[in-house]
Every structure is written in structure tokens, then in C-alpha cells.
Image 1 (cartoon, one colour):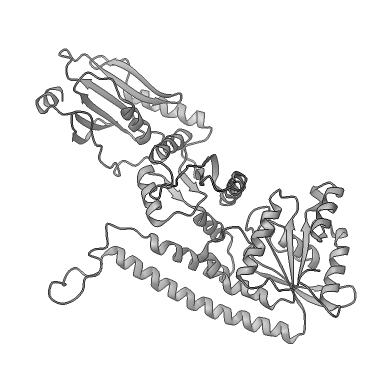
Image 2 (cartoon, helix red, strand yellow; image 1 turned 30 degrees about the vertical axis):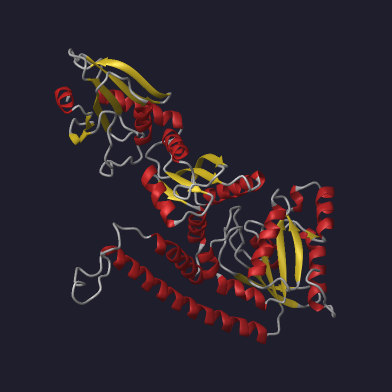
Length: 502
């Protein structure tokens, strides 16, 4: 390598596996090398890639910052620099990663102190121990990222990040770190600066993250660019919400709606090696191989979307029939709405004595449940629990669940349940109001109910409820339901109802 580099007056390098096999021979220029894609040697779950780079330096210069950045970014086993001006060639400069960071030393290439493979194995074991988990674990480990312009209030960014953390935990993702950035200008290609993204990748590798989750929605090109540069799984906020929905859907309606939303989201993000030859026109000069794999995949996704939309239409007709039976029985309908994890299912169970699934997680239940509720005066109503709302609900998901949400228009009364113990409850109320506006339901008769009052001091809860003219309850304490039952009776059976709130 020394003689070849001197003859060419260029840097020369080789990539070597732990077994001693050479995978690449690279010829650069006088200042550096351009490393090829390392797709055939993915990182996997280990801390290091299993490749070391040995290359020459023409002018006896030490390892540069670019060298050390590549070492950290690519998670190479080691990086060695040979000075071609050293006629004796008895030593090289070596850099490697350790739990403490990047370390460099000069080593004797003819008389190494120890077996380098054993040295690397011990390094990886120590890295794993310091991270505090087993590398072979099946749990996804994520770093959350939020990139906002300075025009967005920092409190809003922090609230949104807290919510993203809850979404990740609902998907059984282990959150290792959260990164918030507020650049003066958003990078349209990578959302953040290339240097910052490199720092993020190094941080991810040091902590053992397997994925990056962005709080913002990424365009197909941004998703592709970030994935290629980081070699990590990259998700955005919409994907995380869709994943939570997919885990929680159990009924046929819910499964069809979630799959439809996922396919509509993924269709524009299908990627291949280009579409120039995907579908050639017929005639002279147009004959060719026909459809390529990418176009076939897209066509299959479109066909599946069409099938699911037909199924959803059929399920919608079944819902109409069930609604007609309820209308025929002459029973008023109350729909419980609210932000996710506000306690809607818990309240439904407490009011009706039912046992629908309840869990302290976002979107614990997606399937609509309807139960009968008998009032003290021998009056009955049908009370339904709807899917929870969330800020920035993905458009594809909103579209898929629109047929379910439109049933709110048939309700005689909407019971807007709010988690008063959540410090973001006012923003959550605003998000629910915004979604109701999109569904053209703001003129519906509504009762505002503050739940989880037992988690606040009584005087604080009462003052907040009084400020918003809301009914105060604790879904876990049936003794607190008296004012709520009275408000429901007043709203449903008193004559001369007026206004949108009771």
C-alpha cells in the first residue's frame, strides 16, 4: 500500500473484516478517500460494524477530524493511517471507539500487544454494559427528534415532544434520549443541518439506538435522505400514530380503517432504483421490459386500497342499519368524545357497569363501544365511546376513520371529556374543538366534563371547572356522578334547549 500510494500520489485504502478478508480497495486523491456504501455490512444490533479501514497519508499528517467523524459515524472497528514518508514503516496511527469516546494511539504494526479481535470483543462488551441493556434485546430503542423554527413557541415544541414520548411508549419503544432543535432555517433536504445530523447519528450509535423518531411529518424525499445517511430506521409522527392504531385495532372496522390509512401513507413513499423504465409506452421506440418491480408494488398497493375502501363501504352500511334500529327504538344517543387517554372507556364502564378494555395508554381502545344507560326516572339512552383525538392527526387516518367519526353527527348529545390533571388540558381541548370543526359538529349540543378531579386539590379542581363552566367528575368514583347525571337529564329531556353547551 505504501509503494502503490507513493507511485500514484494518491491516498489508498482497504476495508478489512474481522476475519482478515479485504472487502474493498479504494483509491482517493491527495487529501482523502471516498468510502463506498457499506450496505453489505449493516450495523445490526452490535455497537461496531465489523470493518476496519487502513489507508495511507501522503504528507505525514495525523488523523484528521474527518477521519475521526467517519470512524464514529460509520461505527468502524478501527481506522489506521500509514505515513508513506516513513521509510521504516514500523508504526501506524490507530484510532478506535471506546465507551469513553474516540481514542487514538501509535501502534507497532509488526508486534501488536494483543489479539485485535479479542480487543474489539471486549470493547463491544463494555459498550453494551455501559448502555445498560442487552444488545440482542427485541425492544426498539429510539431517540426522539423535534425540529422547529424559532417562530414556534418553545412550550408548544416541548408539549408536542412529551406527547411523542407517550406515543412511543404506547408502541413499547424504549426512549433513550430526546433532541430539540430550533434552527434559523429548516433544511428542506434533511430537516436539520448535515453536521447536526451527523452528531445525532453518533449520539444514537453511542447510546445504542435502533431508530430515530421525528416529531414532524417527513416528506418522502426527507425520509429517504435521512435513512440513507443514518442507516437507522426513521419514523415520523404520523407513522408512530399509525403504529399505535395498528396495535390497538381489534374489530373488523378498526383493522380495515387502520390498514387503509397505512397503505395511503406508504404509497408515495415506496422507493426503488428509479421509475424511468417502470412503464414504457407502446409503439416504435417504446417497446421494452414493461412493468418493473417498483411499479408492480405500487399497483398492488393501489389494488389493496381499492379493496379496503369497498370493504369499508360495506361496513358503513352495516353501521347505518344498526343506527336505524337505535332510532326505531326511540332511544337518545350520547357520544363520549375527547382527547386520547382522557378516561372515556373508564367513564363508560363506570356509568353502564360494562367491562370494555381500559389501560393508561394513548389510544388504548379504538373500537367504538355502545351500551345502554338507565337513568333514575326509568329513562334509557344509548351511550357510545369513540376513538380518542390527538393533535396533528394524520390526514390519511382522519380520512379512514371519517365514516366512524361521522356517526357523531347522529348523536343527540356530545359529552366532551377532558383530563383536568393533564397540564396540557387546554391545548387538548382546543385540538378536540378543531377536529369537531373539521367534522362540522361545532353546533352540536355538548356537555363539557372534567375528569380525574381526584388527582387535584378539591379547591383547585372546582375553580378550574367553574372557569370553564364544566361538570367535575372522577371516573373511578361513582359517587361523583350526581352532577353529571343531572346535567345529562337536563340536556336530553328539558324543553327549549338552546346553545351548544350545558
